[in-house]
Length: 466
Image (cartoon, rainbow, N blue to C red; front, side, top):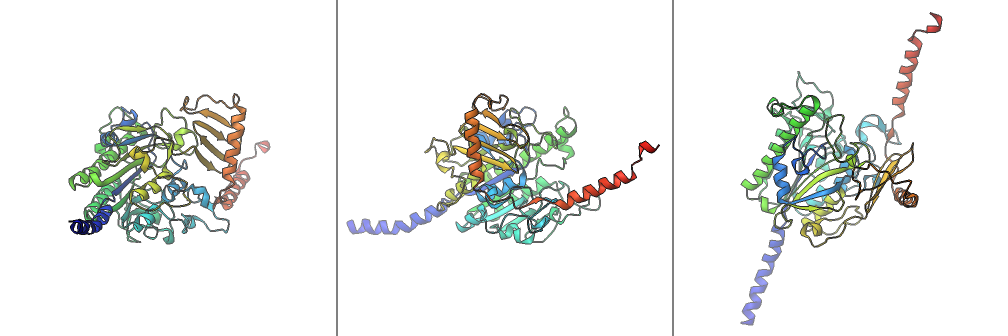
């Protein structure tokens, strides 16, 4: 009898190991672009309906204080992709024309350094099929291509923004990085609205790889400029006008396409074993697309809460409880270690993010982070517990108690000078651990500007001689 029991245990051991492998969840990571904090039903919006994301929020965990590591697209995504503050490897600026490296290389030579591993690299090591759909913005040169950074499949564009309508003779484009690319250097413009196309490509990927663990990074361009919307979606907002109307239509379309992807998970019986994350890459730009960050002050590109605090939802069935809120600050730097932990990967040394897995399960009720940092050129910010210091190059620092004042209305710097001093030193000490920015504003552009000004002065009528 004992021998029979022992034999049964031995036979069951490989099955248990295989079971662990099968328990690896699929990972669906959806990132919107430039959405406003208040423009979601789950954040109280009554102007723009987001029923599919609202349902996702009711099924999983909503993070009320999720932060990006930068207030603009490129650096924020570099942090997300690596789980590190991007300033540690010099990725402090958007990789756009007008900047150059110290050795003089410009434009396409700006990208995520090749020695940095991405979340796709780590998940591929765990046996995942990996794919990126949409915006890359981590370098236009071939050496930075997604297929060389851990992704098995790519259907998107290398740049930072593009038309939502196909490029053609009536809608011309001169930048190669903005054309839609399938795989490597196979350019083919989609025939439909761009958000529709990205959702369709994602659904196709999920269908093709439903028998193995997969990681799909759905890097949407909505509702980033250019402001393009379909007539059908615009018609849903008769009470709105101008840019806000177009923005609302783009948000509605985005929510509908996210719903298409989530419904496909249900249809294929994959929802139960899929970790779903939705978040945004930085705060909404209240000028370019008329987004709304209420009750947060600030906007994209600054370090007020409206520039760096973003919506975030995570649903992992049988792990997260439905409809719960997580109130402590988290960072999008945490996504890489979270995904790696969910995939049963080993702990990764040298990351600034932490795995949220124990917080998703409820096993850890403490703060994931005591301190978070932000920096761009001379501007910086630090959040320590609920205190936040903002440092400026041209005026005194500001201090806010975010627990009492999330809108950053009451500057307490003059009331708590010692707190200002302590946080200022803490921010400075963190900056000492960083690399220099890899790119600086290209001086030749300033030279062109001076030449244009000189030409203007030479041809400007001299009123004193008239």
